[in-house]
Length: 415
Image (tube, rainbow, N blue to C red):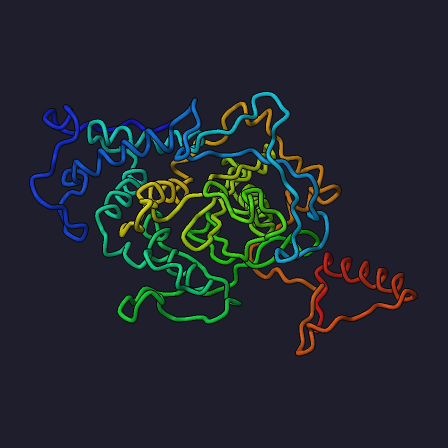
């Protein structure tokens, strides 16, 4: 349930008013009082049209599509880079219609509605700080400015800039860990020489060597995953006549696999909380978000979320407010997410449990964060050359594989 809200003095209860002076995001004035009224109207408009809208399906409404696994290799010892996920949208079950994005963020929308309507502030200190993060970010165009040139960045730099200038700014804390194996590592944010924000590299490996496992691109504040893999052209539901539709981003096997594993890991680490966990996929100037619930086996895919709105003539020079609100909800899902709607809990199973076969208990109880390595791949200078395995060695190889897996499970160490 959303926390009670503390009302401001009577003069503020008639509705949002224009501030008496310009709001500086870096000053010590009360952002809740000084937040501009025109921004409040913008917040209300976006929440109403894009995040809460239902019924007729206009193009700007953000949706969540329930997906089902047709085939995948989740029961194999497979690194994320080799994950295979054939999924499709659920269409043949009762009550499995696409959900509006706000359906899983009722708590967050209740906080926004209270503030937009009466400038009321949450009593809960963490919820109050979370709301303050959003308000200060919206009026701080300087911190947003590096996000207007993302198309020119390399993959690792793209993840770093998004983490430092969007996701980390909206999160309760900006803590993050970037994959230490990333190419072109830098000590400071690459958006400009004067930025100075740190790049924190470390071990981002998760999973178990018996199943899906590998390194995440970025882990933010311990509970949100940022994935920036190459797009899979082989499974692109948004492609038509050689083009990608504006509302759908081609699905990526690696991002879906990471979403599933991270949800199981979070449920294993925090059994008392709901297991609906987000994984943010990045494709230059767009975001797509996957939510997997490892308790109810539900996989949701969001609509494409442009970081910059298209005016139809020239690109906007500001960050999309819709993308900011969505990122804020996702980054603070621990406080703002209300979990799955009841109809999805019972009517939208992704059938991953069946795909995992005999390895489901590994997902439920034997996943790790850190020190997860694959024994299946070794790389050398000639790793791009094809190697043929003679037929008579197939059985021998299988037996060696079985022994190596058993040794790994018993935590034997090799030198």
